Image 1 (spheres, rainbow, N blue to C red):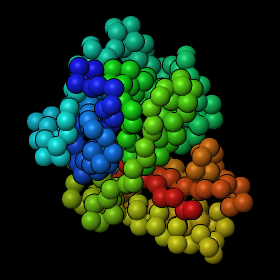
Image 2 (image 1 turned 90 degrees about the vertical axis):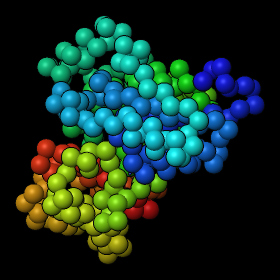
Image 3 (image 1 turned 30 degrees about the vertical axis):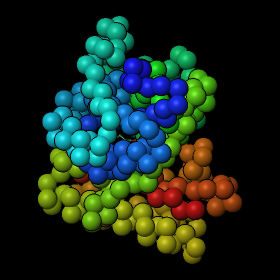
Length: 282
Ligand code: AMP
């Protein structure tokens, strides 16, 4: 990367964990449209998993990934080994975390209330691991722009906060959620759903879009109750949270007047597969 980049080259970077789909490829396309050099990394990051079995079961399809990236004309693919990214000590620390979940706050950045809610509250240490790996990947690839999907809405806010706090000269670009024909947000984890579960999972986005439609006639409390009822009516789906939040701070709101922009976020479990989705209300 450093060798092929010269001063005039605008480099765009897309960090991924692989098992690529059209959601990832949309980020590659966005980078290609704006940059001279597009770099995609594939790294199943052990420090952002809360659960060893989730890490072990995470799909790894490197050959198919490279074919997709080739077809999308991505210039560089970076597939590091775990030992190239982490020291032994860093991994030992995470191993402890799998057992006692006590390692939460990053030493160099403070995400404050941003990580106390939603994914941060349900996956202790997760955003620490994300920030840890993305900061390392940024330092290796030195991009001018980095592309992230709005599907991971809270992650995007965390990365923006990290880049600001560390004064990294990188523009963070948010890209829209790409969905399956039935509305289900594309995700590497969808591969682990049965056909029946995939069909049922369309209820997630249907509920979010209905919530968006109803915002003009319902209060926040009514919207929350509506969404929770919709999801709970499907026995195969376990609701982890449904929140209506300030799209900047990600703190839950109780009144529309409390935020300039509002997002509805959801996390559910379908069998052993955990899925997240969101829609911006305004
Ligand atoms: P992951 O491989 O799941 O870590 O995702 C890598 C990047 O792709 C993240 O910025 C995600 O937000 C983004 N991404 C994943 N799924 C989608 C999707 N359905 N639409 C848009 N971006 C996505």
